[in-house]
Length: 410
Image (cartoon, rainbow, N blue to C red; front, side):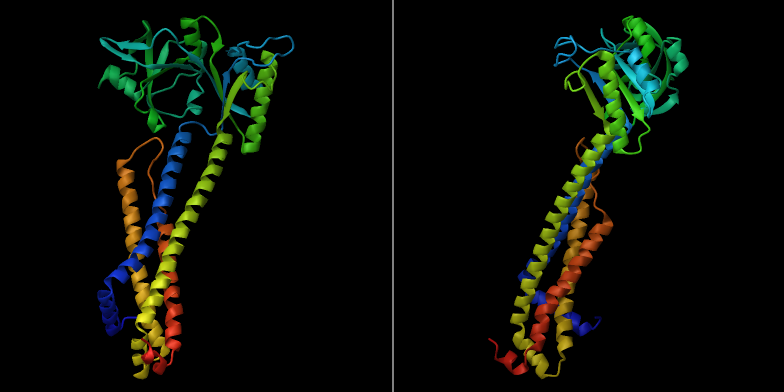
């Protein structure tokens, strides 16, 4: 393998047949390059979906009221379903498997928040103290409001970091008062959403009891969300079905009515997405492996041509006493060298392109594309082995030719 004469001969052959060597190497490099790009792109899409799911509890179930589309026990079609505090309390305290829960009340009539002479338009959200267990939040300073705040109708708020910087600039916000649609609230906490897409948003949270009393005087809820202790999708589905059954009974509508209640099971949806990505990954592997096989076939065909071109040379070598295995070793060494170098180039180019894309392309649908180095290396090794096999078969045939027949070859 380290015979200098052999390497000189291999380089001389490559120099003499530049186009042939380039085509051989290109087919190999292209196969590895495409495999890495395909797998990396699939990983980028998968990362973005996983990142989106990380912003909320995977074991959460969301509910929204709808409008009946089916008549039921004397109730007419077109009746609006309205959630209230009693619905939330029942689901939280009487459904087995429910851990945390929060309602949401949308504040109407404006979203202007002020501090001294600073003003900002914000997304106002009235929720329960368990909300950070559902939509995952990082509390940077202070705290989120608790059950005592809820029961006392405390006028307290928690601001997103972007909202705090908009109003307070570099000033400390905890303990200061802001006015929300003209009503003063004490700032008790600052947070950032775990979802990177929401980190630029200006958001304000307040206790739902306070919002209901101050802004409407009602006990209406616009949305209910709970998390479950379910360890499997089947358990989560069972709790989800029980919740739908209870809500249908409480609000007197047909449980089969598709428009009376809208719901979303995060764990079930996540499992569906995972199944889709298994299919996408398999598809990309099939395409990538197909490309590699095409490269292997190209190497094999070119090595056959190489052996035919060198048949007379092989005959001379054998006439001078060269053994069959020395001839096979020479051709094999050339095939392995070309395949290894081309495979490495394809691998480096593929990883390099993914690195450039990862640093410069940040979208909601494509995040940190990356290729598993072990996969890339394994694919390269596979190509080298395949290149060796591709060179071995025609080399063995050539080595089996008798010198006299080889020297007669035209």
